[in-house]
Length: 145
Ligand SMILES: [Mg+2]
Image (cartoon, rainbow, N blue to C red):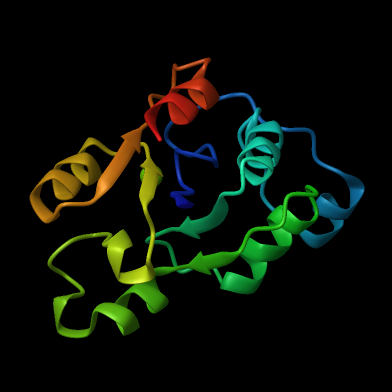
């Protein structure tokens, strides 16, 4: 299965706050962001189960920087999709939905936004929505696949 993850407020704290993984010296030197506590174990488990992991964000972070961030946590991702890649792939339809995972072959998308859940219902793609206070969020994802 191909599983994609949102970044802001899902894996990276912003307006929503949660505990994060320890940063390495390399992360600090390269100015990379911290990720939600539990992400490392979760990504490793998903890999062991044979899944592929994508990042799908509506931010304009560079795909290289996104890849590096996960690489230096020891959990390289398969693909990073940012707003530019979304716009390019969706073309005229780029504003119909904020995200459209099927355009990238994604089977299930993980996000914090109830709006994305509604888009999924309307445009027929599968989502798992994670609450910032969900301390068993990894389990919520594994059960929701
Ligand atoms: Mg988000």
